[in-house]
Length: 197
Image (cartoon, rainbow, N blue to C red; front, side, top):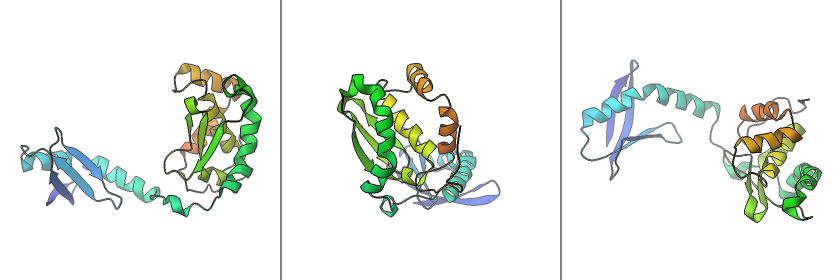
């Protein structure tokens, strides 16, 4: 059911669905449409008030969607060969520091075009998945992601020990991480020859 409320001097339309849920839930669809699911017992006026109270969040989320539109993974132009050429040298450089986990082997590598992560490590399987979009980024960003995932072989979470080990190998990892946080997978950086010392 479509409903409309006045919020921040504008009309805000939303799609209301009654479900067997405990709380009011608000989500933004891919095109910026607002979707609310609510328990059947909640009065429509309460739901309207909830949507109005979240209007600031809705506006901010819609701006983020415009800045960072959804990436279709099938649009990624980089092949496994491209990924091997760009990323495998970094794996070979850093893997020897993790031989206590790898027993003389390289980790298993897999490449995928991912929407929100640059890499994933599965320590038990000694498997690292790297985002294909890394190929288009500067070498310092590629190296950071590879090392970050390798450190996960020793520390599965992001606790203090993880960051202590990462810092021991790469003291400037925070600058590299900050660079990546300004981007989204699939977004090219304006200056690919940028360096971080």
